[in-house]
Length: 506
Image (cartoon, rainbow, N blue to C red; front, top):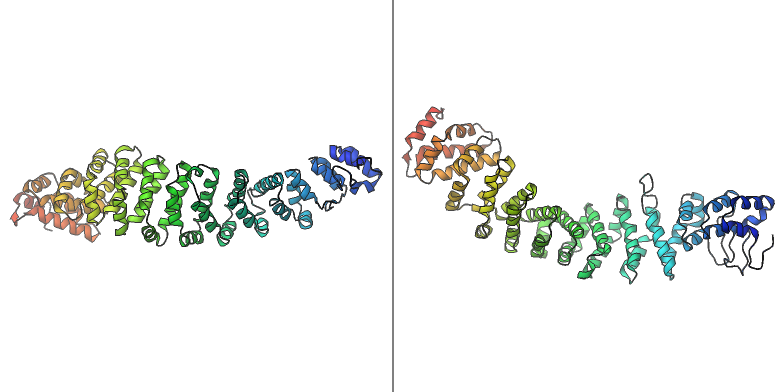
């Protein structure tokens, strides 16, 4: 078959226009036209019919030609394969078709072609290739990720690194991030990211952040990846060793967008809960920057995670307790207790204050000076729910520490009736607080001991003696002794009689 003055034969026009029946007729009449290339003067020089069908997006014509045994691995005079043509002319369906046929993958290596094209000097080709990559990295209909290993084997991460670190358009950078975020559900993929230095790369990107950049999708992608990688033990270890705590805390000072803060705080919580997490946070400093997040983060999830971070950092770490208290964490926690209507957030704030002041006189003094007792006591009085009573009373008792005058003041605020109610529960913490609170009141005016005896306090105290926990039993014995004998070893005849009638001597 001869070519016309444009370098095309009828089979080329039929393929370009997608005329399947005409193609089949021509091939049946003359099979030599099946792989006939266009002439050098043609607009698509050296293109066979199947390549023209691909270039013009005639998918059915392409499949018909392949079924007729067209040569798929043909290379044009310009050195282009069918995979190159699919990329150049943005024919994703063709590219995916090739990827699904093992014989074509082996011959054409389409992913290698894609990686080469995405680094091209032609902007249009680069963007098209990046979009192809975005599609290939997403799960298929069976929710499987088929190409992650091939992509990594073809140095996807090196290409990703070049794109995100250089002066490329934001759209291209975001597509590159999609390649990674799309495949994060694959555990082996995450492990490879960690091993190949993804965490170090992302941290280096955060260090160059500017305040105006924090609203972009790019930084949401950065912290989505960091968050997912830090859920793996090795990723968390790498994040620590590469200064991740300091970088993430520093980044919080720039952030304004809620979703981004949420991911940041969740990552920091994972770090705080890891082995040696509290020590590392205390060492790098910047806890006051975390405290500032309370002031402009209204989201419940963020506030709860902030509380969890503060709780974890303070629990059992005296230095961190003081840094957090001096850094201003108590006022926002008190504000949450007094103003929020979310019970979970209120109790989380109460518990966080408790661990910050626990056995730390400096923090106790500061918290009381800031007015911590009133809102916690108010919450206690408003609720009859067991969990609220436990946490609020525990917190109040931690606030007063070993100061007998403060203890007596708080015990009077809690009240004899509530302490007696606590004695009817099986909660160890409440029983300990109740016995200590009643014992403290008995050390004051004798009228308090009388009120406890007349209020039916002896019988529940007798029941406490049957508890299995030794500390609870000792607390009950100590309180009964204070009821029976006042300060100065003055006998309290009425209470002694109550104890006798309750068969307490047995």
